[in-house]
Amino acid sequence: MSIGRLFVKKVLFFLTSLFSFSGTTFADGGPKPWQLGFRPPATSTMEKVVEFHDSFINPIIIAIALFVIGLMVYIIVRFSEKNNPKPTKTTHNTTLEVLWTAIPAIILIIIAIPAFKLLYYSHYNPNTEMTIKAIGNQWYWSYEYPDHGITFDSNMLCGTKEECDELSKETGKNYVRLLDVDEPLVLPVNKKIKVIATATDVIHSFSVSAFGIKIDGVPGRAQDTWFEILKEGTYYGQCSELCGMLHGFMPVMVKAVSDSEFDNWVQNKKAAAKKNEEIKKVEIFK
Ligand SMILES: [Cu+2]
Image (cartoon, rainbow, N blue to C red; front, side, top):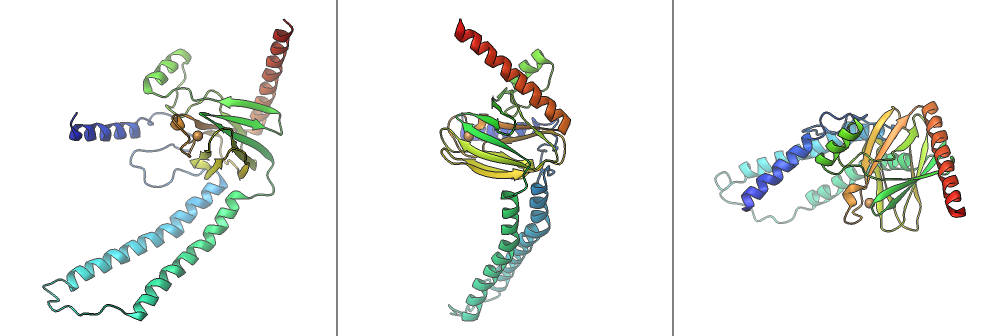
């Protein structure tokens, strides 16, 4: 295949993958074709991140970009060979050099102060109400609920459109390619939840973009962050640290539910675990 045709094929693949999400229901709206900004935030952390970006960082970026473009256009016109046939031999200007070092440094400090505040807010909360543990494995997530005594693995359901279609035919449900899992992380809304991330083999990263969290799961270490989901629904994330061959196939799927639904789910999970334990015991005695 020629390079040109390969390029066209790659672009087409990219475009179809952009549109392949349409029709499925994400609680946070999901990614949209030609989307530029963030998706709607689902936690107080992400609300603050979006606010910080939209009303603080972005205006600064746009102002600097316009200033630099304007300066370049001015220089190109004003100092062209036609308009400035005899260039000066100036090489240094102390005032200018001090200014173009000091002004960017001051801008960075102005950005750093609210950025550090937000970083601290998003990583530390002493008032969390429950804890979950996300353990990265090659290549699936295991979840533990230490407060409720629940542990389970979460595996991706379908990786290609054909696989998802086939599964849909069998079960009558719709599945999101590369994102739906057999056992989602079920969590209550309006609760401050601490996530402890770790891993068993290599470094993974637990991340859900609508929650504004991304935390590395490092073998032998436990790192934590927190979030509070504001709206019920299904949210998706992906492992965000290159962790090997199937790195793209270990999604995070979170089902945010009401308190009572969460309690029901906990009871069902516990009952199922007890049943499994009994079956195991019977098998051992056989
Ligand atoms: Cu991973």
